[in-house]
Image (cartoon, rainbow, N blue to C red; front, side):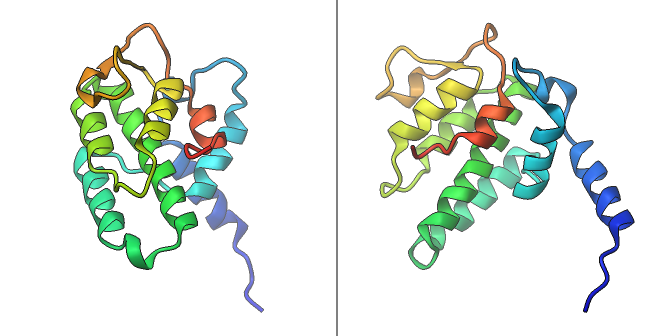
Length: 152
C-alpha cells in the first residue's frame, strides 16, 4: 500500500492555485476555495496562447481515438484557459482561433454561447465568429466555466 504524502499534496495545491490572479476568481457568489479545488481537480490550465493552440491541435488530431467524454473535458479546460487569457490580455484573436479550429463533430454554437455567458465577450451575430469582441463591462466568471459543461 502506498503512503499518501499530504504535505506534498498541499504544496502542489498551493502552487497550482497561486497561478491564478485574484481577478480571475472575482465574481458574485464565488466560493474561492471551492473554485480552487475544482481547478486542482481539473488539472492545470494552459497559460500561453502557444500552449492552448498546441493542446487543441493535439486533441483535434486524436479525436477519432479519444472518448467524447475526454474531448469534452479537454475542451472545457481549453475554454477556461482561453477566457483567462482574454481576461489578462484583452486579445480576442485567440478566442476566435479557438472556435474556428473546433472540429465539426463538436457543437461550435454551444461553445460560443458558453463563452459569451462566462467570459468578457459580446457579439452582434452569433453565426459569425469575427463579430466576437472584447467586452470590458462584463467579468470573467470562473465558477461558471468550471461548473457548467459547455456542451449542455
